[in-house]
View: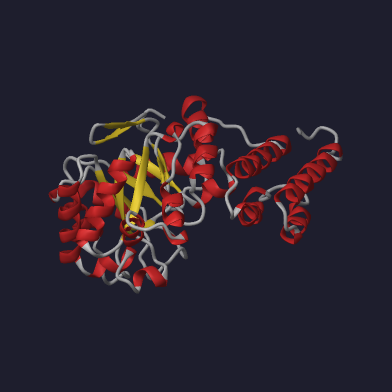
Length: 344
């Protein structure tokens, strides 16, 4: 697998391996990021995308909303290297929020030009800005001037198939002094439907001269990661939704690159990852711990024998200790009942 890069650099920040956990709203909080980091194989992790207005407002406020914004940007020392992702459409507010992220100790700031969610797009954030490249340029130049740490951006191919701007966006980023770009090659109109057109990643890679290009979209297996690099020439791969249900994906990629094969999680390992994540939530004591447990029950029971039964039980529960007991009892039964010859 010699064609897959072992590392890449975003400005002075060395990222090794050349793999990135994508920012995902409601998923990539500090607990999940640390869970991924502890599995090994992930080079860079990113925060949930965070409102620039929320950051700036939170610097001056002590309301619950302010606490919520800072929770998005909280991280532990073991999470380095880590990038803070911001969204917004006001250049000065974006610059102020980026400077705050630098002061918080982040290694990189990333700007989101990809989110397709209506409430974000309606405010001209996320992929809504793909229709206003002059404003994109103003934001990039203003933010670049405000911080000394590396600045990157993640974006989609365009608003729709008739308004593709991926190459223009990447060239604009390089001209404005950004140190890397990440492309999800679907359009805003596609959302997450259909197929990610990797040829657009190759076009972006060919269009920039000096900055790394991170490919994103439809990586479900280690083989997909290797194929993306081979077909597009990208400098690193970014994985989002797959990591939610398969937290081992980055470690699997590392194994595949080293040996040509990789381990598939056993039932015992699925139990361990679920139990570990839930215990980390309880230890953090966040107000949304029960909600997170229910959310991740859907992800972590993917592929688990009789997993639907456990999900139903968890969805009915109201307390974190109750959910932990349900998980323990379920896997104790399931592991005891595995057919002969099946690895636990």
